[in-house]
Figure 1 (cartoon, helix red, strand yellow):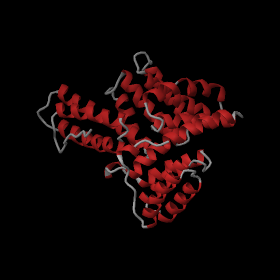
Figure 2 (cartoon, helix red, strand yellow):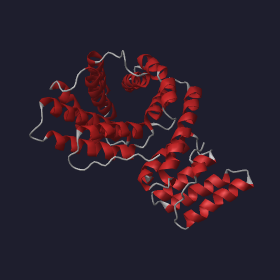
Figure 3 (tube, one colour):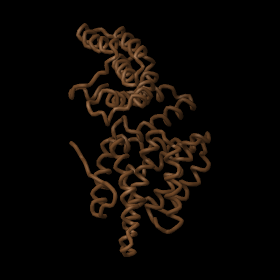
Figure 4 (cartoon, helix red, strand yellow):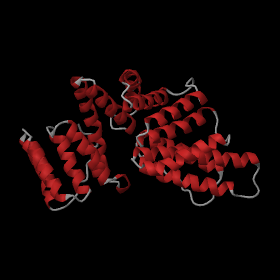
Length: 321
């Protein structure tokens, strides 16, 4: 399904409301790149709209709310992409909007949550906890969607984990995981973050069997996203370096014993212009195969990689595991 809204310069607030709906759909489908572009255009357009001279206070406030909504979503996308330096000023601007009484209730809580998430990514768990406490004080969770509650509690659990308080961390990390898995795919950023935290928790508390079970689930999700980022026929969806990052983690989590994951890694290396690594990874994948048909299939891709040619997946290959 193709979703598109054209935003250039000033547009009216009704069009921005439509753009907000489309951005929400894109984010729910994991199409972060397209959502990022749309949110940037929304911010620019909302700022242009609010700069008009003949606006009522109500109209100007509407543009401002649309700008703040897009800023929060853009902050989330940047965090999912690991771009903390780009996310931080957005989170700080959202908190400033709370202090200026432009955001209240749940929206104010979300703003502090974004700042806490940034602090966590910067290795400041105590600051993160303070932000999460402010979030809760401003916005009690009654009325929140279950995935929002699960993510919020999980972030709090991440902070306690970073501080070595495993007793407080564990229920916060485990209780919301089924909710996140039900709402999102295994490869979604929020699910993967929960998996990483649980792997760390179980490893640090001597429960390697439980850690291994989560590693396998994590690897499946990472592999699916990495394959899509490297082999999609839509160039806007491809991101070689990110694909390599995810695939290497999937291969590491399965101790280089899964040929499908190594096959994905090879495709990702090609997309990232790392051709020698691609050939070696594909040969490693083939060495683990038992079926002659699979060896022939993987060998076809190996020839492409030896010729420095990327692989583009068929629709039937969109999900792997």
